[in-house]
Amino acid sequence: MHWDVVYNNLDYFLWGAFPKGPLGGLAMSIVLALLGIFGAFWIGLAAGLMRLSRNGFVRWPATVYIEVVRGTPLLMLIFWFYFLAPILFGHTLPAAESALTSFIVFTGAYVAEIVRAGVLSLPRGQMEAARGSGLSHVQAMSHVILPQSLRNMIPSFVNQFVSLTKDTSLAYIIGVDELMRNATQVNNRTYNAPTEIFITVAVLYFIVCFALTSFSRRLEKHIMRYQARNR
Amino acid sequence: MAMIEIRSLNKWFGDFQVLKNVNQSVEKGEVLVICGPSGSGKSTFIRCINRLEDFQQGAIQLEGKDIKSPEMNVNTLRTEIGIVFQQFNLYPHLTVLKNVTLAPIKVKKVRREEAETTALQLLDRVGIHDQALKYPAELSGGQQQRVAIARALAMRPKVMLFDEPTSALDPEMINEVLNVMKDLARDGMTMLCVTHEMGFAREVADRIIFMDGGEILEEAPPSEFFKNPRHERTRAFLKEIL
View 1 (spheres, chains in turn orange, yellow):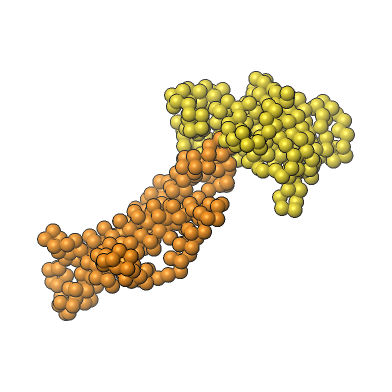
View 2 (view 1 turned 135 degrees about the horizontal axis):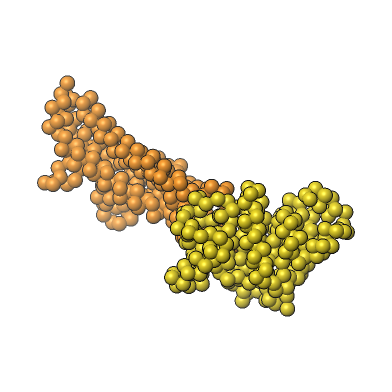
């Protein structure tokens, strides 16, 4: 076994050439996932609420976006944005930005469905009570419905975050310096320790994802107390 | 002028007619009890009054103003007509106090301190002492329903609608809610109550109406309603529940 290869390149796996060079490795994967989930949250919130609208002109674009993205592989979206960017902006977008855009667009569609399900899962009486006391639809949404449904959404949301963390490895294909690509580079350079290298990669992804899911489970227990029981 | 005037109200759910030519006039301070078998349209009827349900034909007036007229904003209408639901529908993520102050602060733009003072007085009135900072899930069903009444009263409504307020309660909690309602009635609140609590109806109702199949079949003061109901359906219903 050649664990020394892993040992000698561990810092490269963890944060790439940083601080002398660009950020890479697991740190880059996490940054991509964090920015991705942040962007996806806002897009998903907007699209999810739009899809719940009774107005067809509002609902329709959101439905198309969600259904198209959900019916498309992420890898294809990554390619698509990478090759579309020069046409749209007149110059190539750096690979990381291009990949991030794909992550946001892709995850946004799933978050939208989480938002929609979260809102629909609340008892109808909540909206009726809010509207019945004179709150407008927007006020009822922002003070009564969303605070509850966003809280109920947290587990699904973390789930989506875990998926995205793993999916950032796909950015490898367009040359983004993240964990998967850095590991492949080291493997190509040394080619005597593929097993050790990829076991290390697996363990690193696992640690991050496992930490997230454990956190989510604890959060879930905590929030259960405030769920509406009157269905 | 009547507080609420309902004229030839007709409503359909698709092809099914839920309300058939309902006419009613409720005076200020009057307590109207609506009873009838389930599916008779009584909940739908009172929910039309604050426009939680839409209706296709007829008119409803609040103090002479048509509730569907363009000048009548639906949110303003609802601040004047409080509603209490069978399932309480308290906001589980907010404390009791915030449940009561939310609408006054957001809709009526009352200052927070003022809204809280009023809320505490109302909570006191419905017998929820020292529970203002608890969450709804920490209260019993009867307590939750009394908070829901306080929440509706916080908007200083002219009319209160009760949609089977005690039907989801354990028997030993029914009276604490009914007592609050009796109190309200004595204070001169105009009330429309859908309920099966015939003891309550006998004691505080000015009039009782019996609905079946979307129609009002019987309408009488309590004494007459219980002593000699005219309609055969009413007799059968009363025999079932008394």
